Image (cartoon, rainbow, N blue to C red; front, side):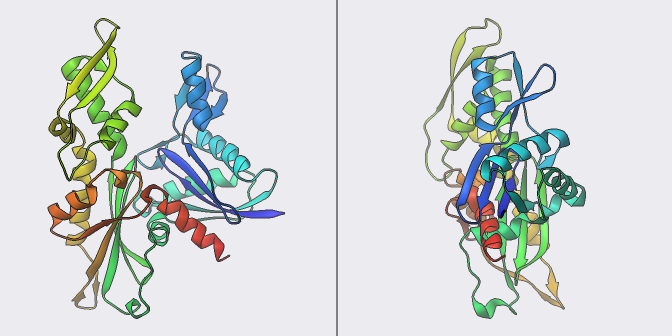
Length: 321
């Protein structure tokens, strides 16, 4: 017996789509590693073990900036997650990878998946999968049109804006540093100005409470005072929080601007854009569509369920196999 799975192996999370069951796995892309270098647990279980027994394990991530930085760890995490998604079966895989990160990154992902006792493994552009998963269906008469769609995927490790026309990826702009960079900016500001150490999850939660379309209350952080080791609370304004997140929020605007300035031509006729769609976990920031559209003076739409657009698109692809 064999199954077909779609795998979205992201910097922050792993999502797997089973052709018969839909999305069967959403887990943090982390592993708990003991002092001997053995992987004790992966995903949510790894975070729980680290919280229960701090100091006995180290939580590690195999991805940074959208690319695999620890091949062995990536292969181990994938092997365990694939077995959870479809136990004791032969697995045929379609996985997504960002075009702008190059062929080396795609080959690493394919090798890691091939090491997981899988059958056929193929890699597709994540922007094409995201477009399918966003729910947008091109009109029949758009096949020969000069107008195309822009998909902007706001991930934890990178931002990628892609121009797609007639189902073909025509142009891509990629910026390394996105959600993680914004989280680190918040943590760095608190540490530098208040001597406060907070977790990345606390920084991320505060970021996602920040609204870009309406007034937001000040953010309150609870962490550890670096000088005393005691608990401490600090309050910062939404304007300061927004500035800390500029690497992500401003990065979306800048990446889209570069893409729009370099749209491909068909002969001597320039291409046009009929819609801009935001996908990825970073697209869940409240008001980011309106904010980005205002900066670009263009209509920008945030997809429904943006974090799952890529894996849903992979599901669409494997359903046709």
